[in-house]
Length: 116
Image (tube, rainbow, N blue to C red; front, side, top):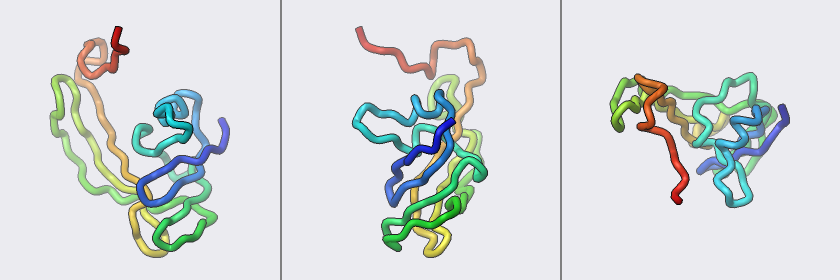
């Protein structure tokens, strides 16, 4: 695991990621992003930067659960949780996360496939 800078809409987070999480965070534009990873544990995050405060903080952002739901967003894809990483000082949103699950993990629905 390595500490990596993850961009959010209102700043960034420095966190330890597994190789699998780093692959999810890479959208192919030269930066890594928070949103595709889902929810990170506070222990994995070491710092955050708030665009509003224009300051880096030496601890993880706050995690605020926005909504716990079991909303079906596509066939076999359920939105379980929605939340935000927020600045410790001003409560501005650093980034958002979503947690999804599949009822049937073996199903092809909900899997991204490269176009041919």
